[in-house]
Length: 348
Image (cartoon, rainbow, N blue to C red; front, side, top):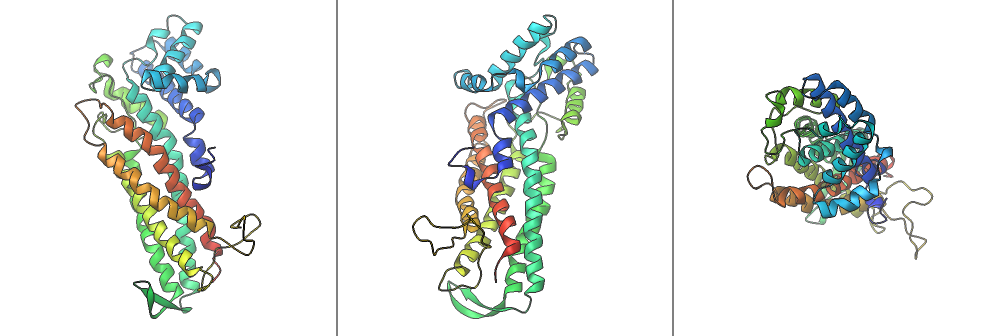
């Protein structure tokens, strides 16, 4: 866990995008690819068994793979090299079938979808929890009067329940959109060197379908090496969600100012204290959500900017997108996790 990312993210997302987890996801792709190709008669069953038997992350020097990726230009290159060497040690005949007919982007995009899937599931659970807490407050405080503010100035009377219902509405909408977008965005990638699956002698689509089923990802029906719209749509939805959470956090922070004192986050030992002023109770959940709302739009913008990619495989644009994605997902989950934990215990 990074000291700089830990307090703005979540344990699950930090683990999902950790080096070991990502290499493990890449190995899962390679094992499933070999099984699918054997089932379609493209490689021997014995080769698939040998490859699968070597796809155990504990057998690999993950720091060395990460270190070598900078020189290679892709983490897939040292990973496939190490896997091929491991398979060759077990079965010289099986080694040529490692990574057969695929390319670096196939394994990296698929691994990214795999590790992202768990993070999205956690985001959806936390988002539902946050929305439920707000809707409960909306019912409980339907007639609790409070002062509305317009243009940051005192306005007329509203109710805290009405305000909570307004906070909840975009979260409910975001949850529904996220479910729809994730179904298509979390898909397997398999196109081979230029997207045609030429080495698979007409069996490529069947292999891709088997691979998608084995990994629990969607089958896109074609390569999407440089057609990134469905993947970027997921980034955009996370951006919208994080912005909605940031709005809630800004309001809670303002309502919790000492001279206002209408709402405060729940307090507990070790939470929200000050190193210099012991009387303070800082709204740390709101802080995390506001920080995410500042960070995530830049990540989404970078993802959108990377969409115009060259020909069949990108030079630089895909790589830029790849670097932005983990930070985007981790910040988004940190935001919703923080508010999901704080909203049920708001002090009114």
